[in-house]
Image (cartoon, rainbow, N blue to C red; front, side, top):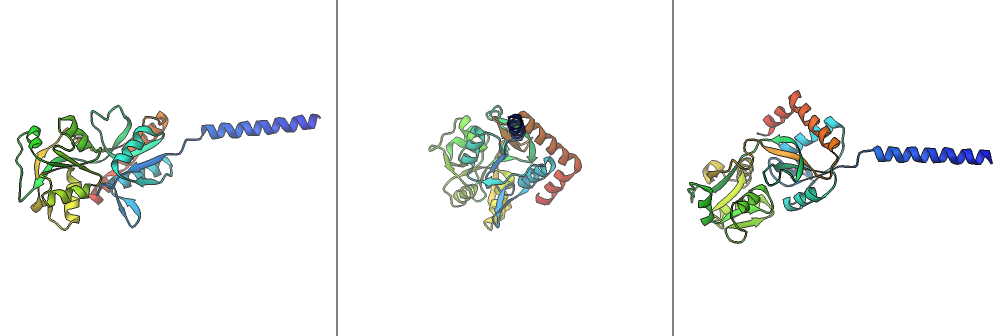
Length: 253
């Protein structure tokens, strides 16, 4: 009888210890992003790019292994907005988004413009002037959200799609007069289409409110433990101090 009770006690202790260890383990992290070259892009079935390599360097620094999923931005944004333990990257930090995520830090430089075609340039003195034209946007990206917050309207003077390359084609073929885009992305897509961006694109209006002085971030969903966010913050700081971050910028820019 004693032996049976002792065995039960030992089993109960082992189960409790295992349960405690499982409870102490960090939950798995889901990483989402979009096709946003040269920051994030899929080549030969693998996601790469400047921001991606920075994120991978941080993952290595903090000792976390997690796959990266590329998908349309609206879907990635919704998953990060509502999910648990979700990391999203190459995201612009705006006033509207500030309280919606837990921000880790900048992973790449960024600057936004309203672009027009060099053979049909649009002169804009201020943002409101752009309301008289059709502008290409990407569904729920920072550019679209920013313009909507400034009184632009989808279906009126904004034409939304789910891929940045679609918008370059719209501008290129005259289906829109303007395109709101990140500077590096716009130039990359123009070159990928076989064009010289210096000869085909005009920066009609700078949009400094879209994080031009900060850059693109990596951020966690609100339903992520603060300890995880802080661990990644320290990891990002570490690769910046070591020179790895600057080396990746030189590689891609």
